[in-house]
Image (cartoon, rainbow, N blue to C red; front, side, top):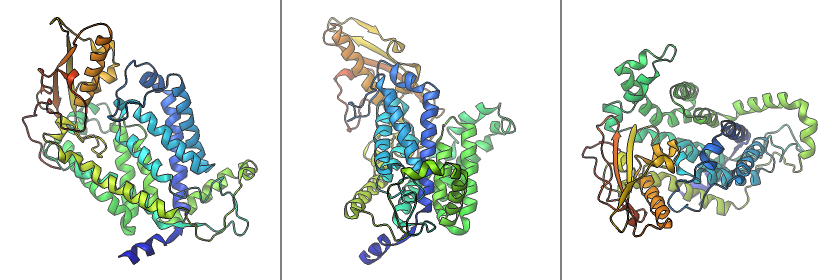
Length: 460
């Protein structure tokens, strides 16, 4: 076993697939940051709100006022440097830190693919992605026609992370709401009546079930179909069709394109060599600009990764964490979709339609009380997310308690009258209205002030 592992770790392959992946990743991230800024989301999501929801343990990660624009600038510039392979190691570290900090500033904006980007950029810190077709290694003295070699595991690690995302997303779809009730697609798809060609069939119930079952099967099988050479091309066509369709039906930003480009890493080096040859031809007029930036030289001998004795254990821990962390919800009682304890960071993609209404009441030492107008403190987007997520509700209750305590109210108590509706069920009370939330400390322990769903969603 040990010999097999050591043999695998010494196995080398062409650096072309990793180079193409680096270029695609950098270009998409660069475009994503420009798109984010162009829509004014830096201001509306991070500058304007007077309150931001934090991840437990990361309360220190807050927007930086007008310097938030500088943070996004660093993130965008480093994404561009990653694409062209300039100061790659420094660039990918700064990108990971800046992008992750941006995501930590307010959990209202949490999306699975943002989490995926943070994980992917962390993984890329340890990979020799600038070994080929980059400004860091622009030319060779000895043989610039030979594609350099890199360890096979450096490419396989990206395939493994992508496979975990797909396979776990497929496992999460094995539940009674998704497969037996076609929820929440039965709610979402009929609203697409105005789509050309697709609008009419989106009203058919059988389509909702077909989409649910196809989505589950697709997520479970696509990593294996991409790995197997004989099915790879058809699997990639399926990747394109699936993600383009989800892009048409749902506002999920750049995620479909990220997954399509990332899936190219499963192909053999020949395809990537052709892609790089095409890029070289297109960029040839700029060669006089690129050459002076090249400092390092490389031959075609296999690349030896420095500090491998440290990097390999780090990646083993990283992937062990990725395999186990999504299952942490099993340690909590109650219905996962209702309590959401352990829901995030587990590749549960678009499984819920959940709406809520939360009315907060402040009570002081004299027994006097008054109700809160949430839009006095929260944006409409923040209020929507807060209204059905218990950890948001608790954090907001503490914000209100601190706010009115600072205004001179004595012995402030905060209660909430909160109702939520999940996947087409009737609205029901989510939080115990007799619990003074201001006295509750957030932790990883079960939140026993969440009322039970009184229904069962069977499955994983």
